[in-house]
Figure: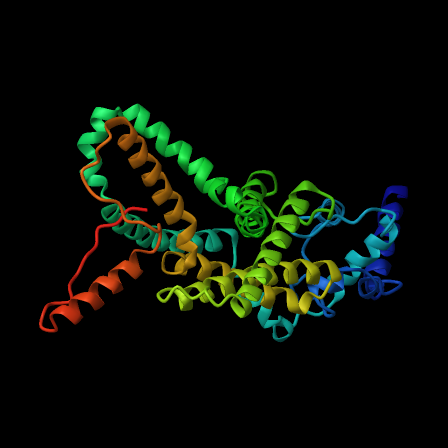
Length: 379
């Protein structure tokens, strides 16, 4: 009897509880989201900006706190002194309650979502291969003008090991260190070095970033991975401004052949560095709406710089050291044999002027003669 009464009592209590209306989960006690830096990247409605939409988040409490404290990708971690655990819990609850509205997802995020690490890598792989093909063609052309084929038998007698040492040493001393300019004009060498070594610094910074910070997470301004590209970019930018001044003041800057392509290279380099600095400043300032468009502008500038490099003054960076190395090797062989077997072209790097002089002279002597003149050249 007592057991039956107990069962009936439990059943009655359960019925009473089930009959009561369900109480909704209380809304967050205060608005935390709009007072945090989250708005800068995820948008005022939490439907995305530079970062992804986080409204109606499905993250568990543990997942949410882990990402909040440690960060993910470009998102930095938030320390407890900036956002307490209690406010973080309110923030999580608030995001769960925020409405999901796909029409609020900005175009910048939709475009940016395509710029995954894989897609960007594939883009630059294609651009780099395109540039490499034409760079090899440019080098092959100058190798033909430098008479390397005729040097073949002499290199064999000179010694291939010795020849390789002379060639590589010249690439470093005359190419990388630009020793000839250093000996003639050290001020000019400094301005030249701002672009050369600044650009090499940017390339090194990108390699180091891929190794030590592959997610491109934000780091402090004093971090070496941030300082190196900052200082290198500043050097390149200063060098480019100097070149702009030279275009206005140096009446000999037009070599008669590559002026347009030279100016294209300088402008692309200017926009590459400028857009890189703008991206960083906007990210630091929290201007999320502008970061993605400027970042796309930066990627476009870099892509164009690489793709057009074999056709612009950028080829000077690899053609001039190659020709200087050819010169050093040829002179070493001349000193060894005292007879090279062909005359050398004076005024290195100005074969196009000799070409025009020869064509003009031939037209003066014989107007009916063909203009197909080819001057074999080495610097």
